[in-house]
Length: 322
Image (tube, rainbow, N blue to C red; front, side):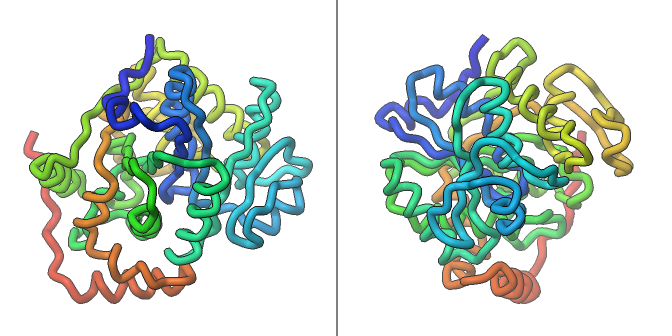
């Protein structure tokens, strides 16, 4: 069974595709099923991530390829010393150990928009990128910034702003894990309202579901387990809910009992769905994107974001009535 991506018409003329995690630290993992599905179709696909990994540690425990000092590294090969947070490095190691492939997982430093644009441009030029799929674990990338319950939208907004500035023919945002962001306080009623507004503009590109029978899902689960089961490694609260949801778990289910103490976990089949949108349209409705364009550092971006959000009227939380 294959992942029935609804975006294939958009990618018909694209051969060199970059799948980039938008801002959850482990978002690149959520892009793996799309990566494998597109590879099966003969596309050349690259992986990148807006990274929470400390670059100095990454260079200490391995030999990443350095494209821009301090802002763009490619994790590759083996991790020589254990780290409790290095999803990109252990993903590259999984490719080598399990699949016998030398795959670089590119890491964008946690900066403001201007350095991130430069990093994207370097990768786009190096690999002839003609399509970018920005992947969000969860749905807070769809928040505009005027919500009570916007989640941790800053990192996603920085990535959206950077991608919006690029001269690349196809730019798509993909979200998976609707309902996983309990700890982040996301208001999913407002997320649905924002999705409806994008659909009204013609910017919703369709959705599809992962199932246990799909090889692309099986590889995603295998890679995630490999990373999380490294000694003391951080576990994503998004994918640790998406994977059980795909496998048919329901309700207050914890994939790793020692991982999450959050209450109100409610695993449902909705978490297995990918939602696809025109990235440019999502960026246009995001109230933070334009002010963030001039930012250099993450601290500057955070300050700018706080100022914007404090100055606008917030939409009240909206419960889903069923």
